[in-house]
Length: 413
Image (cartoon, rainbow, N blue to C red; front, side, top):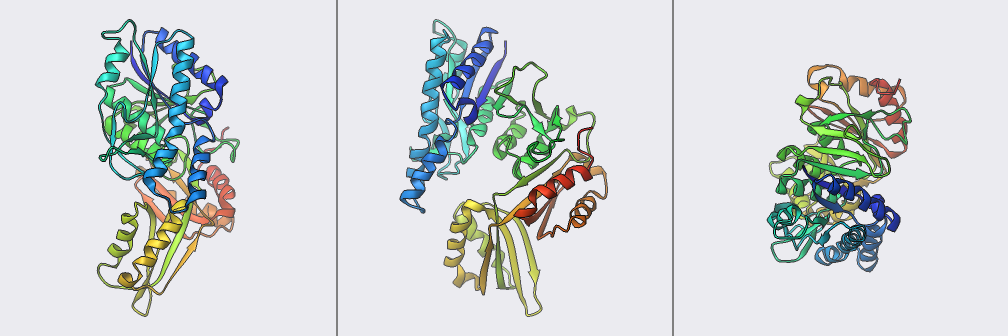
């Protein structure tokens, strides 16, 4: 007997037939005598509709009320799945984030989980004091803040909910069911020859998620790595066995380490350039302090010193954060003293990731040469121990991904 957390995304619960399919998958685990908790997203398209309504009423809406609205999508799905399970003879009940409770900080729209009180869930999953064990159907993406208000974790937050719950209740594994059958070397829709990986390390998956891979949400991988939660990515629409999908595990469990494991890209980036900034101590703190005060994540950063004693500062933010970033910088202009701001939302970030980079030279050069051969200009570069990322014009995204996939020998034989 194992304790399992199963997470199903929006496409997996998109309509009643798919919810019935999910119920059957859960029932198979229950009938195998496993203790099961299920984390669900809103039905496909629902969250986008709810977000759209908020933005239509007010582009700079109250984030607390935004959370109140968008959290309802998951509430509907939990109730429907609980009903579907009960209909096929499986004991189940729905749980909202505040009922467990899942405690978060107060950063509405981007809240971080601080702790989960899972004792009552575990008692019911075991069936203690009950006629039969009970499946816990938990709303992903949401929690409760220190002021008692509903919070949401940001887009893709249901993955984080699932991994956090798995850690809190001591689950043996966390299965993430989605519309793909595992983690690929890149998006198969762009590169048909992309290969599915049987295993990938936490670090590689974290880098891939952070630079645009849509399979898992960044914070969910970070949490899995910190708490050593074994995560399996597999398809909701294919029969699965113990060898299905992709396992996200410790690097030590991977025998053959590729130099590059995957190519990721993101079109959700926007470039901000602040021109003629005074070159003095405290300026960078003023600029990025303004971003932090608005809970805006900054990614790639480049500083260029000019001959006149000023500097240009370039960085990237999420495309959806660009209006707030511009407003924050406008408000801080007297303190910073810059000449002008330029923004560009027509950019994309392309990254190569692999733990093998630690022991192999020339990885970056291969990337730069492959892009140069196709006349793709690099605007910004950033690196980590196992990643190299470049910012390019968005129009060249697919060409760059295909070129790099071939350059690193990742195409399927």
